[in-house]
Amino acid sequence: MQQSPYGIVKSEILESIAAALQSLKYKTDDIESTIISSQQFGDISCSVAFRLAKSQKKSPKEVAENIATAIKKPDSVSKITVENCFINFHLERKAFAKRTLSYAINLSIGAVVSDAGANSKAIIEYPSANPAHPLHVGQVRSALLGDCLSNVHEACGYKVEREDYIDDRGLQATQALWGTMNKEKLGIKPDLSKKFDHALGDAYVAANKYFAEHKETEEDVKKLMELIEEDGTYESKLSREQAEEYVKAERETLFSYKMYHDIMVWESDVIRAKLLSKALEMLDNKGVLEKPTDGKYSGCTIIALSKIKNLPKELQGAREEAKVLLRSNGTPTYLAKDIAFHMWKFGLLDDTFNYTKFMAKQPNGKPLFTTGEKGSRMEFGRAQKAVNLIDARQSAEQLMIKVVFDVIGENKAAEGFNHLAYGLVELESGALAGRKGTWLGFTADDLLREATEKALTLIRERFKGDKGASADIASNVAIGAIKFEFLKMSPEKVVVFSWKNALNFEGISGPYCQYTYARAMRMIEDSGFIAENAAVDPTILVNDSEFALFKKMSMLKEISEKTCAELRPNVLTEYCGELALAFSKFYESVPVLKAASEQERLSRLALTLAFANTLKYALAMLGISAVKRM
Image (tube, rainbow, N blue to C red; front, top):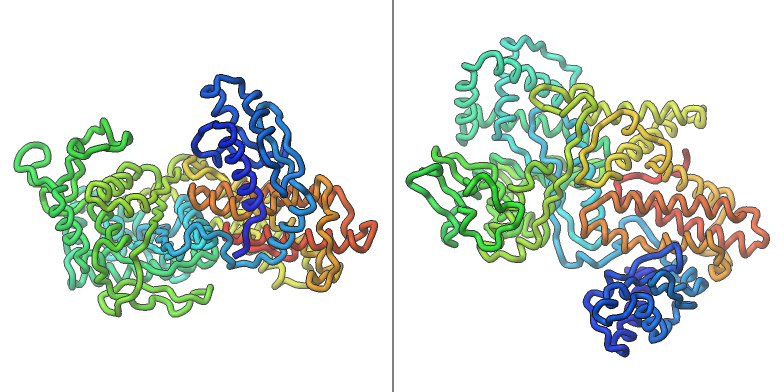
């Protein structure tokens, strides 16, 4: 793994500041957090003077000037200035350009750019949709976030396990099965032209409408659920078979978005493996559980919140005094099952699952494994980090899992547990509701079809003689538009879905980044440039637009690490947009193919190739394909 150009100079600057502070006997913690990339006064700036001013009883300006004077200038820095109380480092452009070009021109897709996750395994779970209706635009957000974060974790050196949890024994799956078992009663006619998940969704919506009008069916659904939850019954087998057909249809959708998984874990197999009873036994042995015999929680198995030391603020003052794991009738809550499942993820419970191949080969060339009644043992689970993509409404329950790990002394599991609480996707007409069918017309399949049709319309004139190339490019551009639009929003924000925004091909978008990459590659192809054979001198590429592009390219590792640590793909989309803009300014500011000298031409072509490599890598982390023609 190559060292990051930006990281190298930042490290040198950090050491020089630390040495200066020591010589001045200034003491402060975490100097690194005061160092930022700058565009206004220098290339890298430090705000440590603001932090020290009070303790030194001096103005921030005086402190900054004292530090700047005491700093021994690193070789990578040409000069140091003080502006607005910031200590500003101006990089030695020739050396930095040479280092960055070497780094970026050798960058390849699949290479690890950071060792942040070295020797660690991360399980990323998404989208874990209930097998009752097709993925809709709200669930698309979860899937895209999970896929991007999986890519980013791999780029940061983690061994990633992409996991999908299939709740084939939940209420939604039961209602969907009731719907398919009672099609005649619901007036549903078979339609073999429909994908299975869409047909199932129709039955699910019709069933819920019927339930609302016929309250007596609640008992029927309850009995069906009891039969489904009992191993070996006809109903439990039928439920699993229906869920498997759903999953096959769901895979078609995910594959069309170029999203893949490693393992599917089924609720029915979690029950069969008795994970819950094992987890409850462990918690009981740790003295965490209580079983009240009177009062509000009589007959339940609970965790009393009042007895937990250092209870997070988010859980303090809650209406409920306890978290119920088993209801008085013995049925487990979602929290109980989640705790057990995450104990498995972190290897706190023995893995008694059997595994088989659900698909021998996905479009990415890798198999898709599944838990099952039969099969063999494999190396799944036992992670050091887990990331759950679950909407913000479940934040309290997810936080409780972390609390439980702390209470039982599993601090590493608590530290490794991460919940990405994303905001809901709502329609302009109101909230998405699976049971009511407001997702009709707003499925993931609908979205991709609409985006592809728009992309085809926009590029059809460019490829009159090659319909195959046109269709392939349109597909990649459509996926790029959708992914960029969803991922550019901060995860916690609520998204109000509109076709205009979802199909955005203008401004800083996926298609804009893809177009910028295509323009760069067309220049490389038209020139016949081959990096290995070219007499390139990056030290002559030091004007402002060239150096701004070098600086932006140099930060790929740092952006990857920030996205990974903060679980915020919008950091990466912003970087892609800024990188594409930096190249456009470079392209508009200086001649490339018609440069004044052959050495300038070759050197700028090398910079163009280095940019293309960097943007292609960054887009790949978003799950977006870079296209050579648009």
